[in-house]
Length: 363
Image 1 (cartoon, one colour):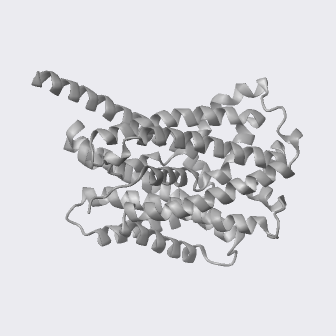
Image 2 (cartoon, rainbow, N blue to C red):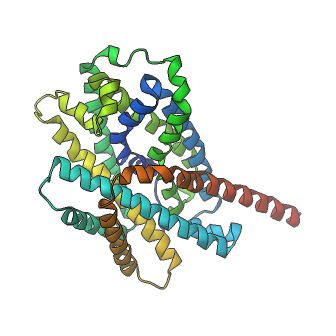
Image 3 (cartoon, rainbow, N blue to C red):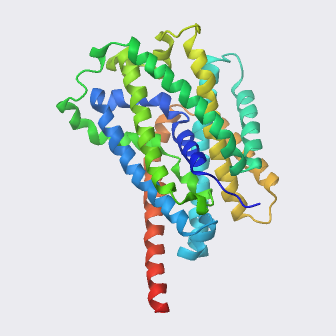
């Protein structure tokens, strides 16, 4: 049976990959970097990555039913393709470690304060490994449900925050003095947009002709989704308080009153955790898909087990490193620029040139 993913599934895959944890972090990033005018850098970065995702999708559409490992060899040769794939394996393992740390932190802080980190991590890795074994197409069907619930709950809570917050906390919505910090804000906002490279393991078919428009619209939608979260948090807490609290979005939710439900934060975290689990599943699947292509003779379940052990050990080591978030943030932007901008653009340009050369030769 041919693998295929619909445009709707692509929307939810991208949406969950990008918003799995950084939706919680977004208010503090904006409060510290751009203040009340932070919605402008969000739109700018969304447009930048909207163009990037369009490039990736167009590249995939040039080679129907193939993934990066397959068509990369046609474009730049086997050796360079192997280097690129190895780079992406390392890149997504690092993302996985980062998300694992966030998952453990959220669970121990809000749900299971007495549970040992290794136990939580063990259960999580087992779940992610099972999802990775089932493959990208099966996971995409599940994400339609998870994504819809997460989106509905988050938007609903943000609307409540907007109706219960104070208008003066977000006014003026544009401050000329904030523009001095826009470059810093744009640089910091690159990290919340990591993950669009998951498209490199998705084989596109004829049903994905409109995927470039879907991809671009998805990034714009994510931008407005982030803005809704930021403005809702600002209206409840104010910019200064938001900048001081690590999980400011969750703190704002705690203050928000919701009909019938007494603990709004617990209600949100139930669905917020599902999105974080989904983000980890995506990362795990991508690493396994690349590894299976690289080591074709190794059975899939063996690859899953090896990846799980590597992720488990590295995450346990990372959990014992002080200020690990700052370490990740210090170098991750450069990896994102390479993986989501330089590599796709280079591959597309070379593919276009080769295509034109072949057309001229045929004539």
